[in-house]
Length: 247
Image (cartoon, rainbow, N blue to C red):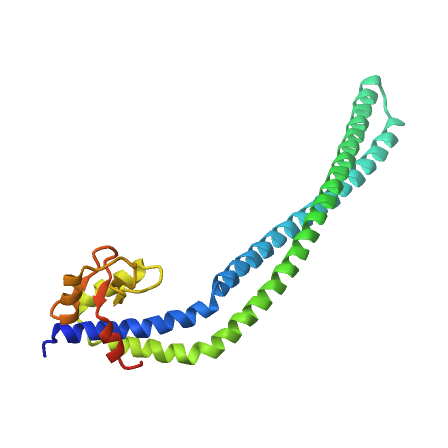
């Protein structure tokens, strides 16, 4: 059965009333959901950073072990070459073995230098690691507090919100698709979520711009859907707000 314009306007206004109540419930949560999300990102980021630093520290420790093994091997080789010096038969062999001993000594020096560098890196990275762990503990505490606050507020309002959302879904069924699309777009574009507003003190209650008397008269007749010339919201007369039954 084809709806009259008045029925369409009433259906839109009833849907707006329900959505306004949902918006008010969600406003109670304020910035908490965003704060919780930001803190969760911080915690995840710190956890990733800590794991990365831990991996780098492990690699440095492994590098120190490798260098210590190289030193041990070089020292063993040096002893072997020093023993061989006692059995050389000519200067050429002596020079060759002496060169090998020199190379082993240089390898030891390089490894010892690298061990010192690795130790310095470990000291610096350990300080960074410990700060990251402390930051993580602090962020985790903040997250736990904010989550608890959000859970408390959500628990107090969840049932009411679910009931209102179900009412809104039911109310949408009585609105033609063209109007519903326009209504949804208006709600998305409006900071306060108001797509359908009343006349208050001769003005649009959405943007507070004045509405000419003739236009107000047309709105009160409910013969056609009229939008605010300034903000584009759908306008209904103040009497419709009084006639609307509470959702």
